[in-house]
Length: 267
Image (cartoon, rainbow, N blue to C red; front, side, top):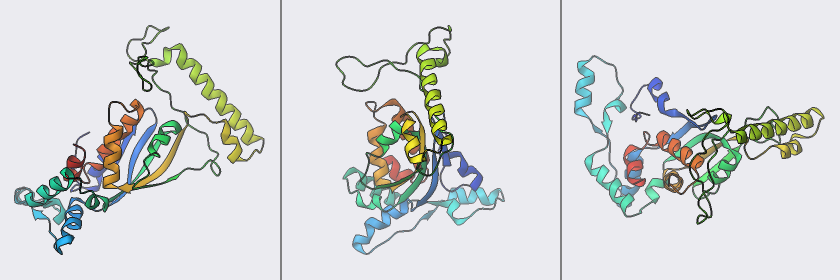
């Protein structure tokens, strides 16, 4: 995905506001507060000082020459002095200025992966779709199976299993017998759930029949500092493959909002 700054039209912003993950998951940008300048000014307030955006003369000249209409924000940039400040703050772990900007995402992920998100408590708050109130048809994650890791490892997984039974070498994991077994299990769980709902069982109890592979959705609001910590921990090669994909998507959404801060925080 191409990285864009926020100095774009609303249509162009859509390119990074929603990122698809896995087979049916996604990370959506709902709202955000602040910018790289917010980080700088929250640090400079210690000296009762503040800074402003610079005007990018080259971009301004190019836009005027093309007779394009533009907003003041389209030609704003962070000064070299402020870039150095952000670099210093991140390098020396002065994290509080990065806690002022806030980002709200709507995330759709399997329950077992959602659990890994919710382990990150500091700087985050979440509100999840509740199946006490919602009884629509659930969706299930259909993974590409991976091998069990070497015996010396207590967790994680190895390479993707090769396809068998159908001679498909293009990544068509639907031909793997374990996939068929899994799909049958998901269908049976769904049928049981729908039977319970049809029998007037309360949704808060009927949901007990739904497995870990079911997708759920939630709002996740956190500070820039908190998201950077999440990203660095979950993008690591030792993290589960699925959560790595979500961490990558989170980075794609947040980076254009805070390009200088995000680069320094996630080094």
